[in-house]
Length: 128
Image (cartoon, rainbow, N blue to C red; front, side, top):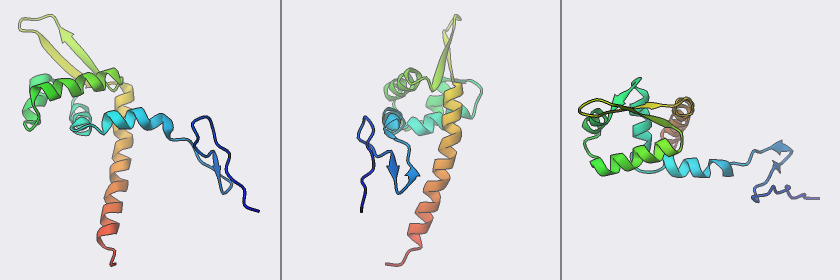
């Protein structure tokens, strides 16, 4: 007799073929943030430095407008992936750094990138 998996609160299956499958629904909000244009590049770039200034980010990502850059930085800050540091200087200085959560995500994104690269390579070698 075929048994259906039990569903959790969000409707995802908790168990499939006697294997425990974790619900991925909590990742939805994060995926929406990092799926935005430039977000992954920003996480990678900011992670390459201990602190990086807005203008240095802008110079590196010259295909991005200043307003889009500002919006993405605010989104990443609200998601607690980066921290905005302001200094009371003349002219004012603002720097960005990854939070611990941002560093952890960046580390996991490298694994995802390797997976995607393998999948891309595998699908490129498949004869149809």
